[in-house]
View 1 (spheres, rainbow, N blue to C red):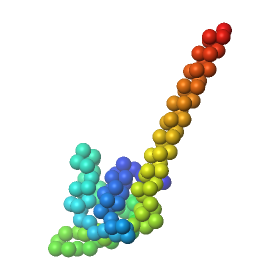
View 2 (view 1 turned 120 degrees about the vertical axis):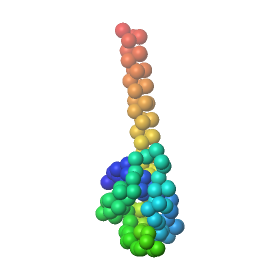
View 3 (view 1 turned 180 degrees about the vertical axis):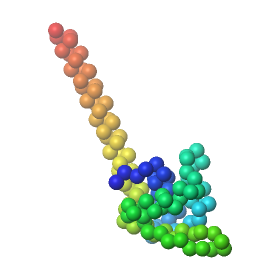
View 4 (view 1 turned 30 degrees about the vertical axis):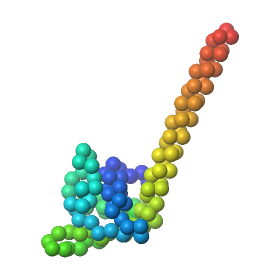
Amino acid sequence: MILSKKEKLMMNAVYSMASPSGQCLATKVELLSKIPYDKDFREEDIEKTLEALKIEGYFEYDKAAKKDETVYVIVLKGKGLSYERDKKKSRRKLIIRLALAVVCALIGWAVKEIISAII
């Protein structure tokens, strides 16, 4: 499944905060601090984005109250633990596709030039 922009931002934030075992405690402020300021991500988006990622199977989370503040207890599942690897894999796949398109375009241009030189 392809993640939306907000889901990718949230997944990057959660993954960066998670321990090697895939667990983390995070407040809304901590999550927002991990998201770049130039991105359109608001406090109201946190809950629905976390829920969407939970439905997709990236992690499980629960809410807890600590001194009148909501704390999210997040445990990454299989898809969440492999998120960084999958991100690198898809980036590498995109680069290969772009390189292949450039090579095909160059071959097409070369064939056109050869044919026009012969005729």
